[in-house]
Length: 517
Image (cartoon, rainbow, N blue to C red; front, side):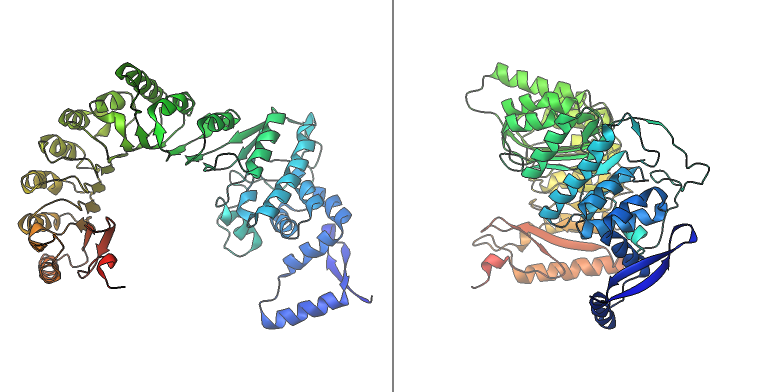
């Protein structure tokens, strides 16, 4: 086949022949006429990768700036041999491979190619001078800007000398530098949602088990559905101190939580903990229940960086909230206790707890406060008034008298941005009092409120559209007169038929389940 010949300026000023089939050039020319033409850098990378031996041989002299676009081209074209060589010569501290993954098949191929290169290097006592790799990042949505910047599709926002990137080497530096071997971190986010690990995770666990100099690190761990024995096997190969965000969205017995708790205690850098749907089995004795609760709370003592705590549908909090909070030794920024049974003494302990005075986000949604004194919650709001930004008191059964008692404390929450108290049986008069008070909070931008009692039909308890329309007009007029027309007040109520919460703004609408099919 006839070939066209083009010379490009190569390394050290030499002219390097760039050869490609004529039909390839013609097809590219046709595509260029209908879309943006490929840049010279892209064409050069593709041309170089056609000669694998040449591509691998020039890596020692390749400028740092060309590694990312060449790696992207090798990844897209599935040039596994070139990928292995690129990993071995990678001049950056981090290789964000996960950001390039779009297909599971490519994922496996590239992972295997990357580990083939890593295996060979880790087996050497002295690493090559060019190799700077410390972290193989397999998270799919991390460092996407890295590839965009180096490919030229985004403006360069960092320099070559910033932390995490390698400095270009001068000729004097291009001598054999002995670097001691250090463990390589493999970073990914884990989501355990099936009974057994998938093929990729199984492969990764096997690789980590084979090498002491390969550490599996995880910043985000989510557990949805997996037998506890499988979870514990996986966590044995994970560097637990690397976990910063833990979500347990399982329906677990308290005994299962007790078996998991020692692993949680080793997550000493944990910043965010979400725990949901923990229940006590009917055959558990009070002594056993107390033993498992103590096992869980004792592990909280090790979490010296915990600032966000979410507890949803956790059965053992009733009468024990003080036991849990005593073991939290850090100042919490977010505390969410939702859909739980609490005693008034629990709310009193919460209001007096020393590490909740600087809260930014507080949610007690789904906690019944109907028969409780408003005093503890009022005191808590006063303590956090200078920092609180988001407050949620949905479905708490708060009555008029209780809400009126909370209004002065709410009026001092100068940083409050959002307030939600849907599903509470309050009157129109209290709702209007709240509006008059909160228009003075300059940062408050969004309020979610329930349909007041007067807006319901007497017959079946459904909202009356006409009354709601009048209320909405009145609230908007009050905001206009107070100089806060941009403040958003939205209705949000649970439908008595289907139970789903529907948001209404600006006008009142019925839940879709009321509409004719």
